Structure formats: structure tokens, C-alpha cells
Image (cartoon, rainbow over all chains, first blue to last red; front, side):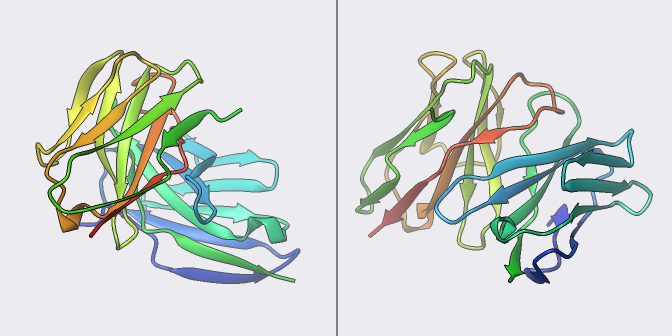
Length: 113
Length: 114
């Protein structure tokens, strides 16, 4: 039972354009959401997060949008750069305590020159 | 200077053996975790430790046992290894046990069972 879903296994975007990665969740107890970036043979690297009390959080080229009623979040990267090519994981937590993160399956972003 | 480090990076062993994976964090964090990434690429929580106390334990076989000598270390011991244990195991840490803390990951240990 996937509680966090990333329905696009891969996404190809031209350098300089906007990359939009999507994520859906089913568990209404989730109230903290994160995006991680992962290169091959490395661990996930924290990118940006958002609390459920907000609908947008921005950090440089990265912006995360949260639509709580739709149980949907997205990560916007603009402008996309070659170094952004990686697998992006959406993750969620909630319920209090040291809850582990629940991850999506990841989206492989490929930035084309 | 590596924040969360795991050793070994690769581990190849026979079925039935016992093995350990070590994890250390130099971030001064209070909470550490172990995750398993299976062949379908899902990352799933296995354990977490907060101030040396186990606080969650998902449906993991009791052949897996986390051991924390101090808050900077969380080792994973696996007894009687099975083929299905082949996966990448990631260690992570967070500042405290609050749910709204980002977790920082090590580079993973790829375990292959022959």
C-alpha cells in the first residue's frame, strides 16, 4: 500500500527550462513533506521541505507547492541545470514522535543540454 | 567532512552468515535511523533510536538488531542472512525526534547475499 506516490518514473527537461516533479499522498495524518535528491551510489540529500500549514516554500531555484485538499505536492526547479539530473524522492511524515519518513518511489530527472 | 558515514560500502556474503553495518554521525543529532531500499527502489524505515533508546520498530524480522553504543553511532546487526536481505541499507540522522525534522542520510551499504 503506497502512501506516497510518484507516478512519473522519469522526466526529461531541457536545460534552462522549468522542471516540475509531482507527488501524491493518501495518508491524511502526514503534515510534513520533504524532497530529496539522489545521485547513483550516494545517499539521498535533503533539498527542501514544507509544513502542512503552508502552501509554498521557496529556496533559491527550488520551490515546493502543497495542495492539502488534493493531497498533492510538487517541486519546481527553475532554471534547470545539468547538475540537477538525479532521482528525486518525495517523502512525508506526521503523527508525532520519531516517525520514519515514508518515501515515494522516485522520479528520474534528466536535464538535456 | 562526512556528516553521516556508513561502513562498509559494499558487503557480499553467504546465506546464513551474521554481519554488521556501522554508522556514525558527526552532526550532534539525537536521533538515528536505518532504512532499507529494496529491489523495487522503495526506501522503508526499519528502526530509529533517540538518545540510545529504540523508539520505533517496523515489521522487521528479529534477525535484525540495532545497537547504539552512544548517540553518534547506530550499528545494524543481521543474523542468519537470507537471500531476501539483499538490498541497500541507509543510515540517517535528525536533530531530534520531532516529526518535522529533515533527516540526513549516509551513502548506503549495498548488501548482496550469495
